[in-house]
Image (cartoon, rainbow over all chains, first blue to last red; front, side):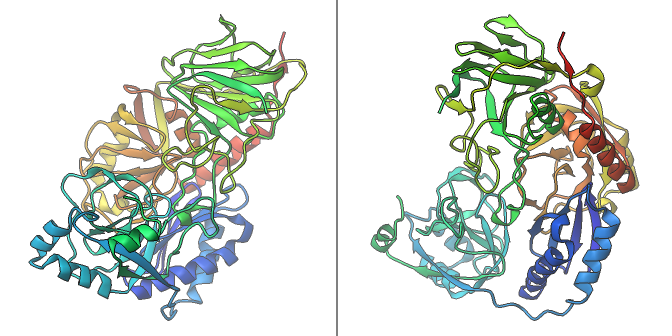
Length: 226
Length: 312
């Protein structure tokens, strides 16, 4: 699938597939590289997501017709990319009732014990599908259907930094305190966004992530905050 | 380093340059002045490069003490601007002396004023830009809005002749605006009836209007789908959430989202929208991509020919 649409005065939206899958995500990754080369200095920014890339271009040095055709030519060549494996990143998580206030209710909804929820959450190797919502907020998929739980009907006013959370088939680590409606099951001590460090994020789109349970004490040793 | 000291920070005063670009992959938004043309005019009045760091003063309430002689220029909305308590004209530059007090009263109809200084505010960029996005804690002096006793650093400049931007070269503000919209690629999700309703109705700015987006109130637009797989959102995108009330997304928007979009507003018009206060009226008119492209080139041409005149 390759669809290119005008999205605004200096933006085109490129769709590369439907739904979330590692294959479509790999095509999104490859498309970003190809579009960067194809547009060069005419490119302002790219927003990769699950199955799409938003391309933002310099409207005074090029135009939508040129961008459409250059993007199309660049992407036709890379229709069948094999899934790029990305880097594998391990993120420690302290799973507990204290660190994950929704662990118990999520387990009850799923008809599982909290221990089973923790095991299932760790058993999946996730893929970073998109980064957005807030700096460093990485959407990871896909959560095992047994523990995939909808957002809470009333969002929390404040979710702490490092909160590990589930919403439907997605899981994520909140990079900074913010309001949020996801189900909280633990805390991760690894900063997900640090403006003063290079790289600013431990993951980028296309990487793979595995969560590993650690104790409360280990969480604190790794710099976790209570 | 000295410059301007903040005596009263006002409701929302933010250092901004032209905006932060190329950082969406970290989830960072653009920031930058909501009324970019006005900030550029302020810089032009001082012969600064157009995207030099200046101050966006939303709703007024700001008071500053000048710590050393410099030149300033003020443009934008209708906060009464005073030097040492006396109201002074905007859309012009002023020579100010150490000890002078600058004041911005509360905005009445148009809520963003821009204050530029000769040479710009000298702030270290983060991720390539000085633009402040408080939600991200990035940019400005410390990632936040101005606070009492902050000092805005700038260079000392000797007085030079003041310039004035003639009225025909200024933006034309109104509290009844028509916003040009490129209909979106998701318009097939909106029936012809819903599209007609959107483009023929009048909407009002609500009190949920901020630098992330302006939420409007008027005839609800229904959409055949409730949500889409999350995807990138461009400046000016008009989202239709479940309640059918449009939201025009602006500089501090989230970078990705999953609401359907009926179209995307031209930046030249979102600059006027960003000046509006609750109750102001907004309607939409559909334009083609070609019209949008031409409008941007015409505006760029106009900026390159801005001609400030010496003050009497």
